[in-house]
Image 1 (cartoon, helix red, strand yellow):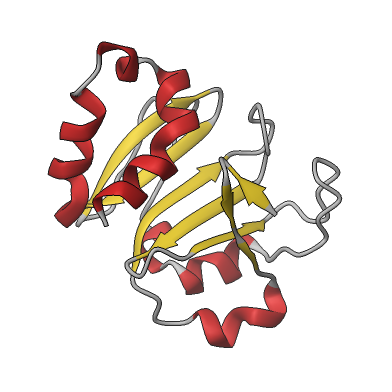
Image 2: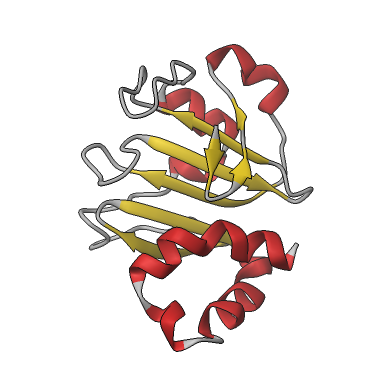
Length: 147
């Protein structure tokens, strides 16, 4: 699967063992009913690898049938257990060590605290980057550029 110009490693429940202990630095998740890839998840590791899955499998959006349950996703990314995306970005509960950005239309982004300042600085460099649509479409490129 290609996401925002980056080839992703598609993963599913059969890959759980090899996904344990990854150093995840950014995690994008779409709530059920979100615009775009609802139930879609993209995460980036410190070695710049991009993974994708869907917790609402199978996904009619891409024909991708690789997915995992939300509970399995929590085992891959434990901060997800403490995360509550609220409703459309309101009343969000953010896990310790992470920063949150609402990407619009039911899409959410968590960035590791250690990368937040360079990420936020890069986002703020251009006025055009202040819009949610820009951030939705460019968060991955921005994370990759600071790693």
